[in-house]
Image 1 (cartoon, rainbow, N blue to C red):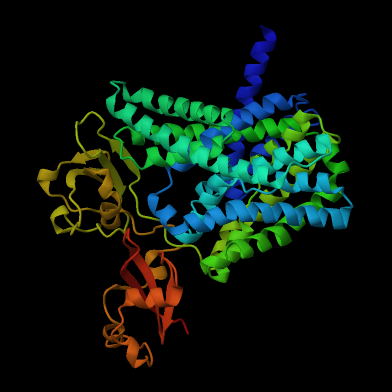
Image 2 (image 1 turned 90 degrees about the vertical axis):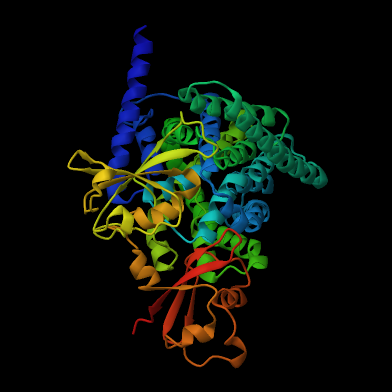
Length: 576
């Protein structure tokens, strides 16, 4: 009984310390995932608490379950527009990019460190995929909003590159253990089945959950638990069929997250906490498993492989994978830099350990050091690099709080939203009737100094008020565009980024030239619309934040339709 209570106390203390340390790391700009790893190491057998933990089976179980929850959460928060913008570039990175990274890391490990080819290829396979937990976690903790084409590519890549990495790792583990390689066509068929099986089962799982959510007479409190239970079951079933369970849960989350279920807000609120708990538990347990003295012994090789991966293998893999897609060089640089390694390589490094291959702990120790270096160098610098490359865009307008009207029997999910008003908000110093909303919404009142000002009094919206609105979930973007605060405390404000003036995308260049100094234009271009001119210049789907310079003005895409047509642009002068 005493040992049980001690274990519970230890788990509770580690969670508390991790959460408090995460607060401190955010203030320092450090990646929170790195903090969780360090807390685990400090609690380990050569750390402050001296906890002895040497069970890779338990670590693998906890890590896999945590990844399922993290990927499921990431899928639910992925908008369909992201797939339209970046699906094929992300697939290229998740397949060709992973294979190239594996090959380049292995080749340089053989050349520089004289590792045997089977061991080098196994090491390359373990380190070949980016980590969804690291990418999602750092974007969320930084509150970083970057151009959609880049963010979508990175998130879809990190959510879908695990099948390739897992197949390569299992293949190389078997080759090292047996001393023989399987036929390459079998590996190719395995990859195809992993992808097709994972996509099919994930889509079916998502559709079945949606049907169940609309039919089952359950309390709303049970739906988040049902969602997690279904995600874990789909992962296990898919893995049992030797398809990609991680890809299946990511797609299942995507299908559920875009179904406009009235229970979705409840599910997302619970999932947010579960995803953070999963990240803490996963990185803590991996930190406990490592022995720092072993890391020091293998440090020279690990550091060499880490710098090879960050500065040579990842950039080359990105350039080759994105060749067909006309990505600007700035975006390619950022995608290369955000090839974050996190828990996935460490978990993959457990495969050789569990399989009993020679030097089994070497792979784990090298993977751990590489992840640490990746989080320190790349994770710490993501926000500054994004700003340096000009890829950060203003944060998307959204309410400070969302309250679902889950008991209301409506075809469209209804919610009440709370908007905190500051002096930059478009709604400040106006009455509700003066606001020109382009979507249907009902004014519920203002919260001022803790008092509810009812709509009948027609109060003036003032700085510091909380504005309450009821509307359907599908209109949240249009309503937020008018009511959300306009940028107080943000690194990038809409005014600075887009400029003071907005033009429609269907205006011609001749129309623009009649108002702004756009310089001399070819006669044949004068009748071209702004939208068509952007397409001529970019040769790809345009996203918010894409810019073109015309004479002494800069045109910046401000709003894009679901079909990819430019609806409005911002205009600002070129800085002298």
